[in-house]
Length: 495
Image 1 (cartoon, rainbow, N blue to C red):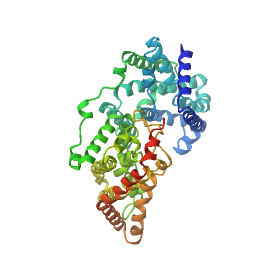
Image 2 (image 1 turned 135 degrees about the vertical axis):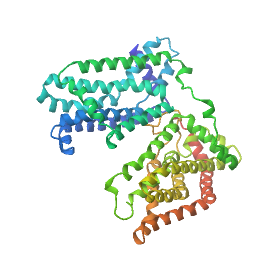
Image 3 (image 1 turned 30 degrees about the vertical axis):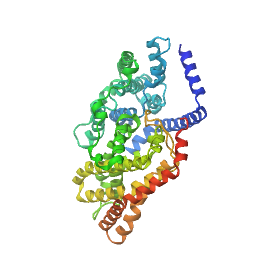
Image 4 (image 1 turned 120 degrees about the vertical axis):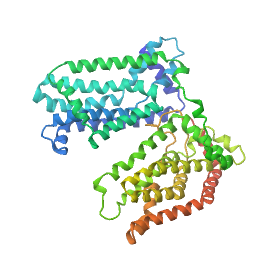
């Protein structure tokens, strides 16, 4: 049965109209995975020396065992965003005359065959046999490595269950934020040392074979949890997550006063909430709002007079992150229904200006949420205010201009991680307006007059851009209209 299912997967891939493109992408991703895993192995080989030199430690094992819990917290985070669910594949197999249990076992087993599974063995195996085996014996090294690896692999099944049950819900986001708080906040704020609480468990594995046995049982229990959940919900109507219709159909009343453009902005908001990829961008934007905590609390960026010039970029990033992420795929979000707008009078103009309204609204929201950063000084609030005005007056139009350069189609129902549909060279250049444009205005005044003069100049230029919004947005509308047939043709390409 397994060979038959693999054959079906191979035939599906080879018969696809985009087989050549998919094969090239697969080869590139495989090459990238090999490179990254090689770096992980290299890190594992020199992990002992890195710990001793980087952390000024005389006992690499003690330091690592005390910090292993943070590796698992970090693994939980990146698995939440990167690990894929086997739901789409399951839907394509349910109609076949095969036992549902066998199909689920096959798909769960296939999901386990992933580069993520190799990270823990490649990283910690060299350390186990370089550091632990000479000091505590080969059996201790195998026992410790087994405990560490089985703990990591157990997270695979936990995440399959967790994402399918709670992904994109308030509970799921709450758990992820709690994990982030435990990982980053416990030591920083001096609440408790999470690593010290978990270290005795790993120390136990040096003198006993029970820890790897226990973790193997945990591994099997979590596998059973994932299997049972998928088996009980292996129906097309159950695997599609039930969502609150009232919330999905909720309109933002502020847009109603802007006519057709406002209605399309409301539709765009509903699109963001309903589709997986756009929801992921919205979630990531929420995480990136914490970006300032990395810099504003770092003594390295403290100055006796004024503030660090780097804070201008940080302010631009925080107040414009969603506009930059979502705006880089400006028309690609509508690639499946772009012809609808072409066939409506004023449809393209309303679509473009509706997106502008949405960008402005989300930037205002990001700015309001960032106001508590004033706790780190009134300078931070001034920076965010100037950066916000410059973002909606200037950067927004630069982002849209680049996004309209040969837009590409994409499938909204696919995840955002390692999904490059709709992405071209223009999207990789998108960071340039965010980084360079503010400094072109700010630095001359900051260096010749004062930093506050630079912020004032930034705010004034942004305000001029806001006043000139009707003219600047019309330039984008005309650009879309002049290239509408090329854009429409590219959106009809098979993904």
